[in-house]
Length: 190
Image (cartoon, rainbow, N blue to C red):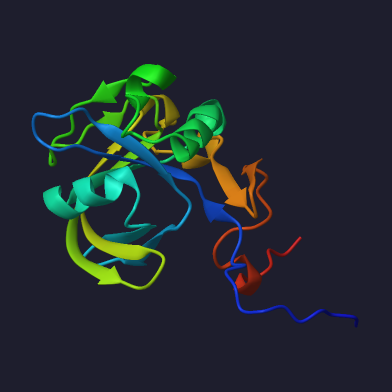
């Protein structure tokens, strides 16, 4: 096998491309697109996002200790890209993208009404790691769009056409190739 050796770098792709919303009391809300977000604990439910300190949203999240992770689907990919390259210091991203800010139950930051899933978060710790600082946060609420509920009352996130980000490009998800535990399931007899 022919392989090249590269200098150390982040090549753990694909990753979710999510829009994170935040807001200081009395100010306009902001949206930052984050590709470095992930689940870190089940009980208590916790997530992390990593943000450069020079980003406009960084100080808002650091001060308010809250944010919402808005999952992004194919319908939102253009807005997600826009919110990742434009600064909230200069523009109102909700206004510019036409996204709908909605009030959330557990935090003061709004959610994005068009998002299939909104995860409300409260910061528990900030890890200053270098180019990015990691916000560790407890999930305090989850809001889901009812249009992805099945007839049996199950939420089917896969119907929402989520996207991922890989090495500078966005990709649609959705082709099922297995399920958790299928590699050890007993085969049905014919």
